[in-house]
Image (cartoon, rainbow, N blue to C red):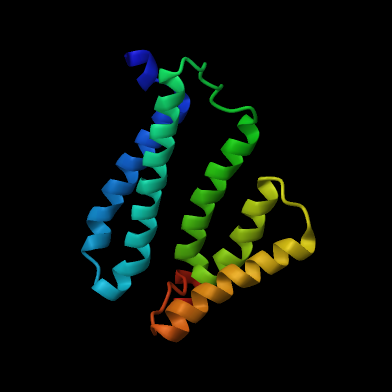
Length: 149
């Protein structure tokens, strides 16, 4: 049984569930309108992780061998580094500037190389966030410590 629980996809799914559930605690302390996006995203991560967990456990029950943790360790390390950099950048230079940089970098890191597609994806993601939350709901995102001084 422990062999099934040490499969890389199972461990990843369990780790995401634990971390996302942990972040739900401070997110729940926010005002309801401010908590909407982070809580929805965290719940979405939990649901998708549970789907991954169930899928991987079904494969294990069927006798499928576990896939290696990663076929491209540089790509995985780069993705984690980008997430950390994005979180820090959001605090220092603000949400919108950080997101405009992070969206195409993330897509590029995972193999999408079409410049027009990268630009379009960035405009759609940032534009949708702005329309829904800033314009539609009058919610301000972090502006960044560097601009606040």
